[in-house]
Length: 266
Image (cartoon, one colour):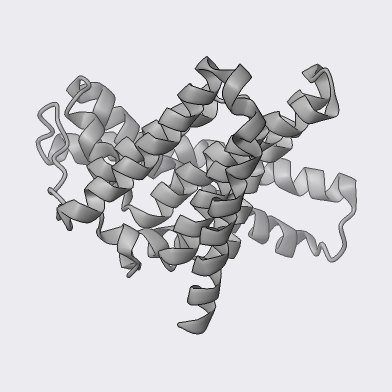
């Protein structure tokens, strides 16, 4: 996982979604996530995935990084589906829902600096909870970067050239041990710095620009429409499900259009 690429995408990106207010993005994410959770219609979930692909393609983020990050939960979903799904269709739907939800989260992370992700959350939760979320998110990226560096150093010092499973497992264990010790030092150092700077029970995050209100409203409206479709197909599945196969076509057209436009503007 390239931590630097994630941070550069979130802070230095120039796409339209980078300029959308974080509150609008988080609201749209919650609505899309609710639509995915409510729906058991594979055509609708596929349509949501295609809509998210169109959004990702149109906002100038790295598509390879986006889909790699969104694919990680699919591995665990595949294991769960293999163990619990009654048939192939249900198993495929489980994997698709997990990937779709992860894709929505990744798009938010790649287009929003992490302090602004948690700034809206801090307004509705106790101060300590919001600060813990902010510091945990920050520490996770620092520890992942440290783990990558330590693993590389252990491999170089051990002279590993191949992919011998025993040696690779030993190198990984040594790197994890170093990261564990580093995490204790990081926690103590952060605590000392916060006390030195006069931490008073709330980390203040600068207010981001709100962006164009029309774009903010359009994004939230699109997410609300997806949720309404999901609820409608769940409530009146008998009469609406026979027509649900039509949903992926306009979403696929939108995704294809955005991909073509993205390629032409390079």
